[in-house]
Length: 380
Image (cartoon, rainbow, N blue to C red; front, side):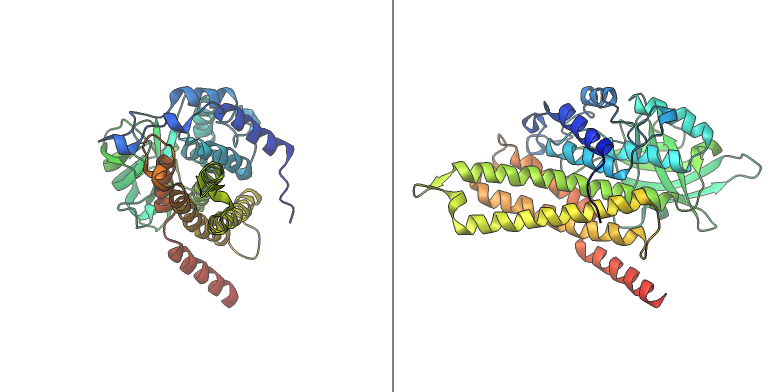
């Protein structure tokens, strides 16, 4: 299998590196120094620069002002964003727009895609369910009123919605009485919709979205089989890309620190125990990388293959959730007291890594899901 990136994908990554070059992790607010959210909203100035670089419309078709690229290109850009802890809803908005383009109606695509690519409209996704442990599509019910083109009525609760107070629309998965999952675009300010403030492990402001007989127009509801599963896989794979970028930056910080820190007259990087730990984490990152590109490629290529795309996504989640935790824990150990110093950026990376790990879920659960897929495949 050829993992060489195309010229267009490499150009997207290069553009991202240029945009993020002047973003300093030291400037990211510290959760250790706040009693509430680390900031009122996301970095709007950075968002505008991403729009100017055409990085908000990577997956949109050219007719909507986009680049027409795929999940691999998005993951390359997300990887760069995580290296500097970029405080922007790039993953959520890009994934939601991709779902609108792939499954939404022409009116909805015309309304959102071009404006979102210019940074004028921001979308996010409610993907954590009612408690963060149950399937997101079961947390909200959707029923349609009688008549052609009738509205949908939504009831339920979605917890820990990222950027809920900043996004113009929240994409909410909801289940119907016919056991189908629909995607409803709920405006941030809307009758029957209310937000309750929550905070992530990294100190970001989240929202608990409560829906009580919220009426959503038919054109703002995507009722297509497989839309939610596709969006969920793209979100998860993008989260794995964030974990990879963050882990790579943390390992580089550890390398730089241990090369300068001396004990007994020698840099600690020359000690065998330190070198072995760093080598193990390098192996973790390479495994995270190869499984990420496999999952992203499967999403971009479609549902063909011997196993469902969910199998490749499960493998990527196993490595990302375990790997990012091991990388930051080793970094804390090798940095000693500096790792906990709030004037040094490593503790910010640790907080973000823990949030990503929790978002991905435990590796054991993904291993079980992968085992079920393999069993079903062998029986089929």
